[in-house]
Amino acid sequence: MSDFPFAAIGLDLDGTLLDTKADLAAAVNHALAEGGYRQVPSEEVEGLIGGGAKVMLARAIEAQGGSMAEEDFRPLYKTLLRYYSDHNAVHTAPFPGVVDTLDRLAAMNVKLAVVTNKFESFAAEILATLGLMERFVTLIGGDSLGKDADGNFRAKPAADPIHAAMERCDTQRFAFVGDSSYDVLAARAAGVPVVAAGYGYCDKPAQELGADAIIGRFDGLIPALRGLA
Ligand SMILES: O=C(O)COP(=O)(O)O
Ligand SMILES: [Mg+2]
Image 1 (cartoon, rainbow, N blue to C red):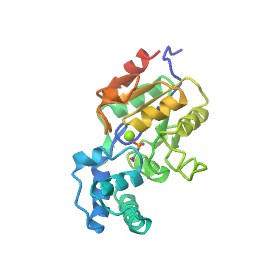
Image 2: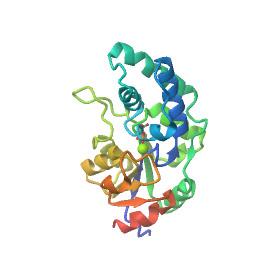
Image 3: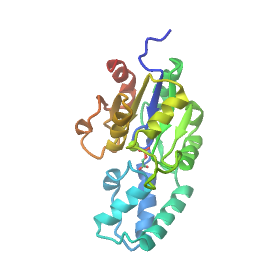
């Protein structure tokens, strides 16, 4: 019998489980080049990740005072998706401590769910390429739950994907870990404890995300979760 306080953990992907920054930067810069925009250094791309690829590109273009008209934006977004589809696991790898910690959680019979704002197909492909997919009970992407009445994907920062993960893991004893304000807001909206991955692509200083705990490496997760009980 495990005394671990949670039966399932929800995990953000980009900036929490996987260091995807270099591949995302290449994709966004490929699209920016096509639109005649300046390249964004990968340190700056970090601050654009968290809301999904569309938000990442929109923020990069807006920062340069570019055109956000649908007919100008759409082709560049399509270019980004096409490029990323072919180059999504070139440099991408798990952060230090991820694989060992997932093994330890599995050994404690803790269910694991990925909740990402990436499209589900990209996330599934990357996790399969890295040989990690079978560790997760479920994977919920930014597009997995469809759109709300306003036409927005039911994705983080909404509570919906976290609620769906809890349902699919069949438990209320659930905690979440993520690196951005999208993650903390979604977990808060769903009423579950949340740990911030301070080593990730935090869109504000980790201490200001409003999480219950902060980890500096992924292998700090199990003690941090025990501390939340
Ligand atoms: O790709 C993104 O911008 C977000 O992905 P994440 O939710 O896994 O961090
Ligand atoms: Mg993230």
